[in-house]
Length: 253
Image (cartoon, rainbow, N blue to C red):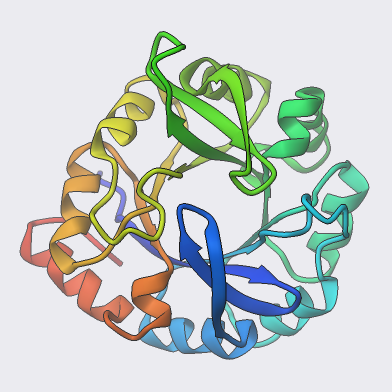
């Protein structure tokens, strides 16, 4: 039986406010995270992803109070990432209402963090966040970045994704830095490359700008589609995206 595709609004948060930029730069205010999360929940969002985009850069803990307040008003799965460095961070976020935890920079610095999270809480809790940019220096043509897209590594994104899944990552959130905020469409080549090696669900992120951008990401192999700016600006609603996917024969919730 086919699994329904999920539509996931993303709340990129800095200093307690939702922000949005282009290619992770020139961040601008996009609203209150709690209010926006509630709006998307009411529109029919399947999940909410909440990323503290400055937590790792500023070496600051994720804003637990905002997570708690969001979880109290949004009764769908909530994934939280940003500044997660230990299983104690994970335990605290789960206690404040998160359902899944996204890891990126800290896991690249210390891959055993993925094993520790999966062993203690289960693989379903651990979401590997991949901030990917194109780079011909590696075999796949894609490398991962850290610190909110600010630091490029020489790590092949496909090699890292494969290792992370072996260590226990239960989901891959694949964000194209090159497409992020451009509204030019998802990087379907990247999605397809990750899908080909994936043994866990793949979430496509980065580049959504129109209703006809979502179905190609599913065709490329995504199990879920994530978007931010088109929802924050009210250009599109979650319901409109689901209707567009249904019209293309995609099963949604």
